[in-house]
Structure formats: structure tokens, C-alpha cells
Length: 216
Image (cartoon, rainbow, N blue to C red):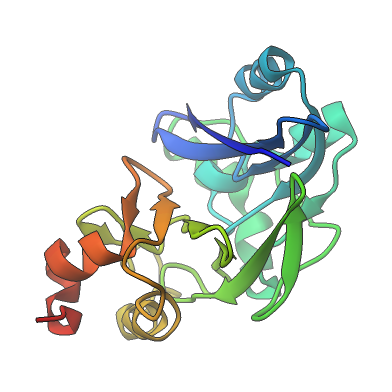
């Protein structure tokens, strides 16, 4: 099995939709299809892959707004995020109009919780619940391969915003990062919800929001 990973920026907010596929079976998964569904379908066609599952890190429209349409077009079920974000998935259409985007509300086939495991393109990812940016935000970690999908929890040089609604909680976010992400090895690489990817070691050393956790 050869896991392949591609990042497809979508929506005016340039949100990183992650496409993962097995180069042998050509089975694929997508994480956070926020919009621009024709572009996502074109990526599947270009790689010759079949979409088996759609995963969501959280309920913001730029991450989940295209999930319902993509599910209809491909037959792939929507899995995640944590149930605590359903209120956001119910408000995506209204939320999207504020940013000049189109989105459809959705209800996943299943929610995710701390410690769950999911399969993406033949690779097992562990789910960790990391609230703060939103109440139901989850991240996906390939603990064997040393790779994760962080959504809007941790960025290169930054962390997720907690001022987008009354549900944001900065202390929750910092606690989740400290207890569930900074315990990973320094060479653990990850993609972010926006912008370039990074590694745990790089963020531990250079992220100004995490200076208190830097190692000597």
C-alpha cells in the first residue's frame, strides 16, 4: 500500500481540502471539502481514484460547505466531526453568505469522538477531539506514519481563532494542543486548514503561541 496525499485549496478563504488515496487500490478519502466541488471531482478524475469516505474536522462552511454535494455526486458517506459541531453544520448556508461563498447544510452519517479510529485510503488514523476553535473540532493522526490533518487547530506559526463566535474558547484550544498534539514526536508532520503544513517540532520551537511549551 502506498498512501498518497494531495492538498486542494478551495473557497475564497483558500481552505486546504486534503485528498488521500491508495496508489494501488485507487481508493480515496477527502477531508474538509469546503466547496468548489467541480475542482474536487476533477482531482478524483485526474488521480483515477474512487472516493470512499468524506471526513470533516469541524463545522465551519469553508471546511464542510461542499460535503453534502460531494456526497450526492459520489455516494461517499460524511463522517465527523464531533457531535458538538452539529449546530454549525446546520448554519453553514447562512454563514457562507457572509463570505461570498455557497454552502449546503449537512448532517453526517456518523460523528467522531476522542480515541475513535478511521480508515483513509487503507491507513488507520486516530481521532483526537481538540475543542477551542469550535466545540466539536477533531484532528486525524496517523500515529504509525507520523502524519496528521489538523484542520484549524494548529497552523504554521499560529493557532486557530477563538473569536469567531461565543463558542470559541482560547484556553480549551491551548489545553488541547498541549495535551493532545505537543505529546507527538518532533518530526510528526501535518497539514493545516489554511496555508503551508509544518511539524510538531517546528511549531514547538517557533510558534509564538506555544513559546511556553518550547524545549531547551
